[in-house]
Length: 107
Image 1: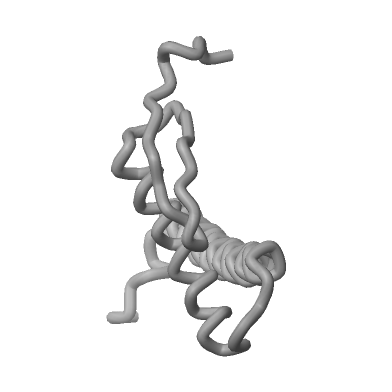
Image 2: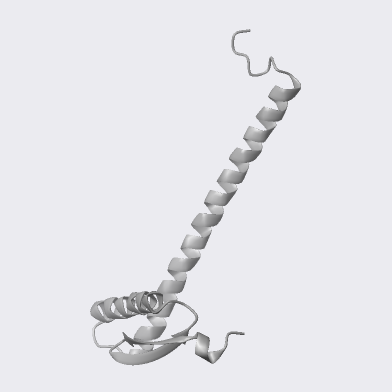
C-alpha cells in the first residue's frame, strides 16, 4: 500500500463543491478525471433542471459507468476479432509451410 506522503493532494471542483483528493497519480490526471465527472453532472443538471446534488452525482456515476461498460464491450469485440484474424493467419501460414504449393496461385 502506498504511503500517505506518496500521495499528491489536489483540490478539484465537482458539482459546485471543492474536494481535496489524494491520489497516487499526477495531479493533472486527477483534475482531468474530476473535470469529466463535473461536466457529466452539469450535463445532467442542464437536462433535468433543478435536481439535488447527490441525485445528479448518482446519475452522473451511472452514466459514466454505462460508458465504461460499453467501451469494455467494444474492446472485447475488437480483441475477439483480432484473435480470430491472428488464428486464421496462423492456420494459413502453417498450411503454407507444410505444403508450399497451397499459397501458389500460379498453379
